[in-house]
Length: 348
Image (tube, helix red, strand yellow):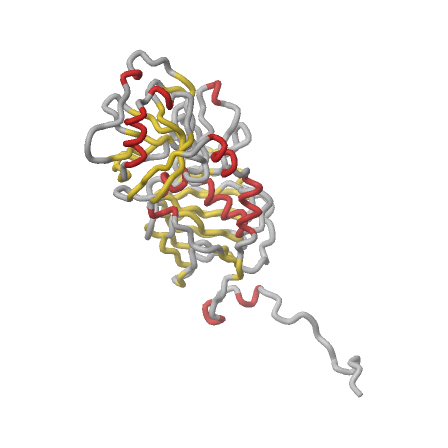
């Protein structure tokens, strides 16, 4: 059985997949990757039919080695990465040979980097002797709900059968979501609680991502007065979800992310479209974010299911070009397609 050994781990290293659905009524939000697009990118690079569990690396990664050949993909926030001292391209797939040391350092942009695999993670064995296994169809760590565990040095991941371990390396174009930018917001059931002037001022404001940011949500900071509403007084708690923009009592906006609570009492001005939520999650504190109001019809037109996004990503794949002297696994590829003695050729 293939294992990935974690020799060193930066804080915030965890297993994440696309999350758990259907548990909101029991108080458990879906959780899963802070940047779901990064997992879809990993699936495209590894020719997988759907995303598998990956290592989410918050700010920095660690040092890893595998007990059997394993194809990997590096996506999300670009980080420094080397294999046996040789630099690895980000947003690309690679072969991790047996015993080779994969080092993933700090981010160069963004917040969350992802190490995806061509095989499903069956379990994570912790140094304490306990094992993390899938629960409710997911092996994602949900820190707020106490599901799973933070991964540290000494942990081992066990995998099922790998997919296409001999496939050639591929790459995807670099994305701009790590720099902040424009995010679309659709109205929600509490949008009308805010005065039209307050909403207009919100959409005219250029925010910066605050230091208060984690997998539950991020604070938006700006100069001037807040964006409160008198209707917040006595407001009943209601269901909330990732993407909702909550206003605290002093009118400071918070955009909720994958590990947000399931019920909240703060009023919500609207909801960031799922397609744009990775931009909020990924940009670093201090990055500029601005929001654009869209109608529900515009939001429906923009929304795509995971299979559609994955199909579009596959159209963008290109071979990863490497210099022959830098290809450590060169001999693992079939460089000659056939052999002949010459006497079977029809030469006049």
